[in-house]
Length: 586
Image (cartoon, helix red, strand yellow):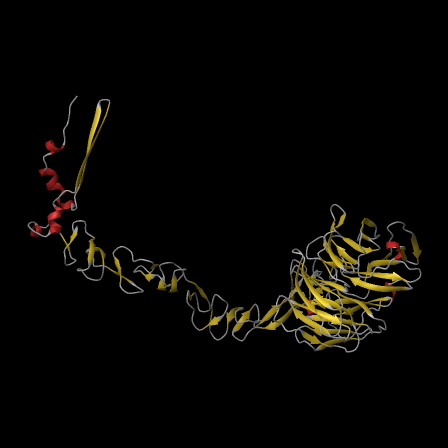
């Protein structure tokens, strides 16, 4: 832990270094204007803004100015963006997208092309992973799609004026604080959702608001210095009433993302609280601000072992920000040392662990996953083990469609539900699991295409176990679902038995009688058969001759087509070839 406190006050035009005890300060930031809500860490730099200037600072000690951008607006609020290197900027009546490129060390802000406008802006909230922002004034909540620069929703206040807002990360819900102390919970994009109103404290304005999604909490700060933690699932239940010696208004609340702590600013002090450890203040941090200063905001630090906050000096009026090691904090409770380290963590977040305590398993990311016993699953939002559904022996979630194994000797279907029997399109792979049939099968005994038992609509089950649109050669459609084999003498047929042939399988049995029977016209018993079928078998249907000559070689080809090959040999020998072929010798 660092023993040296570095407090940075910087100037765009002139920098005066003062040594006060062990603190190093740089005075006269932004012409002496205090930093209120224009402070955040973006893409390897700390960005501050006031007095028509936006400045990028280094994150190292000592902190130095990297670049500055004069602008024609007066920044009032900075917020994170979902896009790397981007940040959101609001004035009192417009909002914009700014960028900082670490590689080129360049700040940009197109003030001629705002995302939108709104009079009397009090707060702006990034709705994480939605491309949306929530812009708030005393009478209106404005939902804006940032890439499209379009207003997607507008809601007017019905009673007490709005003050601040927050978004419940990884959900569709956002909340707005009011002057009367209530919270209004709304949903986007659910226009039918009826707004919910919660009132942790009445008659005192909500002055600061944030969410700690990992703990499913809304953290609410009031103008009288009180802080509450509201359960986002239970609604009006007050899980935590944080004891505080705060006598001034809470000017900001910030959960230190993925840690067990949040910061609250009030008066001259930055306070560090445990999110989920009941009413306790870890460190009143009176030395986190210079004497005669008012702390306006604490924001996400670039390193989870430090704090970053902005303030206003009252004597003289010189604003600044501080980026310094935090005291009184510790590694996340799941962290422990491992064989390769003597420390538990490299920062205070859940992803800063070198090893894990008993009952947890370390991921490559430095996160300690809780190990759950059978019948429970890991709920990643707060890293706790939660009961599976009663149908599930093991599972990945609370739903009946999230089973991995089943209770009561049931089978696990492909949709992860537990069934007495495998559903359609599936078969019993083993005593615990179902598996997919071939796509043409409705039911099956295995995954091969010839293991169908019944077929999908529009197909019939062939005799080889395949589901086909039409029965194969030597088969006929016995009913709407099955094919059957033709009689052995039939190549194709219209039904069962030797009297339903459409063509003959044996080449000698070329013709079918009027009764649908294949007969052997070459048999002596059919020599004098007068039926047209057999009479035609003795006739040639085509004789075609072709010749060619090349130099001293020549050739003659003759093609003879007969319906029944059994008569070809006697017909061939009985033909007068001299009348058919004329050979000229040269």
